[in-house]
Image (tube, rainbow, N blue to C red; front, side):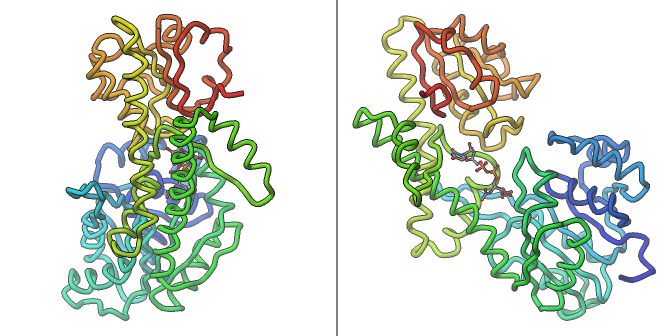
Length: 414
Ligand code: SAJ
């Protein structure tokens, strides 16, 4: 790494991936500059604080800032390595599919164009369609107006695979892939991640690494879709899907996942579409799985409407808004979508409990009441369990007696 750099690493994007990555490198002795376009985020981090929720991330960031190795800014500076960890949003198409939007990655590339120099390593961590690492190289050549040529820099894709809620552990213990545009780039990226990663790091090319990340999340989506489809079939046939899955999973080679009210978060509900967008005629199973999972929230809404018919003015308690258990993240949450729809239909009679938030999201403010679970249940005719948060699982079944219960997660199933 060049000794003329003030920084070893410049991390572009200080969100769920960039911030833990920048911080862990800093605590291992690397000089890290974290860059984010939001001034408030930069200020918060420079004070050693965090703007997102993740267990123990506050401790890691504080340690990194106090060590003097991590600082944040709104613009990049020269460094030996640039890690791009910005979001990859998507545009919804008329047919319901999603198309990746690479504009944040492109902006990050343009921002580093004035400071990159020959020999630097550029790593893309953001989940991206196949071919994006090559695009980054082309954009950078263009943005530097030829000051750097295609072969002057090393490019690699090293996708993150950490699970929200367990990020700090998985950052260290998950195997990784270092996919380079050249073998040298892959090797350099591997050596860098060995700074903190105690698991194996596999060398590959950039396209395979890009596809591997999309494949992992599509695999999970397809498997959840199987469970969700089973839940619909079982409802029609009068079978308890939770008992069915428990029994089927006793087979040594069967491992069915859990049905739910839909698939949320910013990864599994999105990434499969990047494969569908690239090969629409071939990705038939992957597309259908997405459609099955995306249909589940409306199915739950209809279940509630059906059960509500027997009441004149039903009071409905919805338990959970997050996209999955034991996190505060409401992004792409099927539970939130369901509650928003029910709030429209049962104005003033909807009680919501989400133990991980103190304030309702804007879309629900003034439309529903945030309550503790026991209070909400005690006032409700219908109880809809949307997220299997630990406190809900531990609720005494007695409080549910004499209530219509819709348990979308099998939390209270025997
Ligand atoms: N879900 C079910 N049934 C299940 C499992 C999950 O309905 O049996 C739902 C959850 O409730 C949630 C959604 O699926 O709404 C996704 O949750 P998740 O825990 O499966 O995954 P994420 O989105 O939190 O994290 C995933 C992980 N990918 C895989 O497990 C293959 C993680 O390792 C990735 O790093 C992350 O996506 C990412 O950033 O891409």
